[in-house]
Length: 113
Length: 112
Image (cartoon, rainbow over the protein chains, first blue to last red):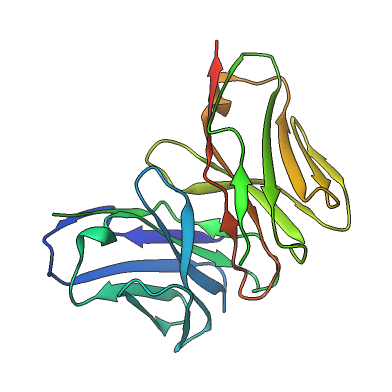
């Protein structure tokens, strides 16, 4: 069975500080990977997707970047956090990029103060 | 781009009754419509989906209906139970990078 693990569970960070969030998928080779962001009390917005190691496509510009250093790992980062980065970050995987079910991780709650 | 509107922001039903959540979308090219459930402070859990080649799909107590003409789809939860209480999100995708456009979410409360 596939498992998706996100870390950390929660972060409290200062404006201007760096950030790195991680996501690991086990039990599935070459998954498509996604980062979604959910503003507090709001809906979800796709940030990045990756179909293979080393390739990441940006969907929305939020002064964030993403990388896929390994087949089973997806990293979301920024060098300087903004207040507007606060929210819930969700990693997800799917079998392909074509209308397949997304399976989400438990998420990381980020508070930027 | 695609816009998905979820019509009920909150919904309260009595245990055993049915709950219906309605969504509309704008992109006629959308052909995949999943529903997700989010419990407090947790990630999203896939519950059911429908593709544009059918207009009805059922999985146990969950029924999804799709009206392509009206660009509308709905989730029906029958015989509701307290554990159905959660936030439900509808979404739509026209394919390509699996970009799901989500609705705003419906907070469903099932009253025992």
